[in-house]
Image (cartoon, rainbow, N blue to C red):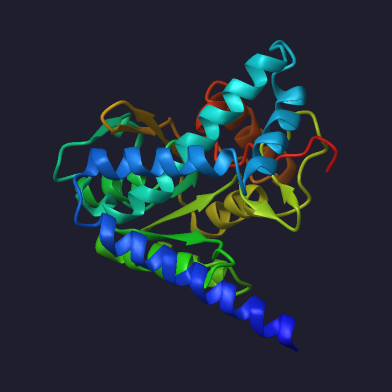
Length: 287
């Protein structure tokens, strides 16, 4: 019982630390917030999060066999520092658009507001929210709530500040998404999500995911009669972000063929930007 109370106390202290950092950094300039996030991540990489660097290196054994051990470790560390920047930037992401930090690439590939965005966890993926609202579009995204109550609260607040009423992943989420699409809105769905111990997409040589968002996107597109546009954000120095929208992926109505079509588009994008991929350290080639 005493051990359980100690765990609850540590969790409470950890949540309090996260909330205090978030609110404190909201008062700082955006570049400083980003640099603080990288600095904290660097400390964590040599401490409590050292295992994540090791897991990212193991993933790179499969994804980048051309690199030597030093190159894989360097890429894994750069990836972790980029994640640290992104986590800290939840404090200031509502300023990205007004500060001119988001450049839109491929606006012509959005046929309108009524689309499904097949999203990727690249760069600061939250910059896509700023891009969508900055272009005058409206809709929502489906997200997987983090295990930390404080981090969940921070994410919800930050997304509401950019007018993204995100839908928590659940059995009801597809129905809610169809309602938004039926009202003429757009829905963003991350197809590279981590679910039940597996990064579902891209397959990277594994058998295709039997379910998850990579399968949900074509199904919803078919039901709603809307196009599927891949979208992702890449980090540039500054910090600045490029919000990329690729040409719509033709959907045939055949589930396996449509999932493969999405895979064919997203895999080279992620492979070319592994240092900015949030799912690098959870990725395992054997599951």
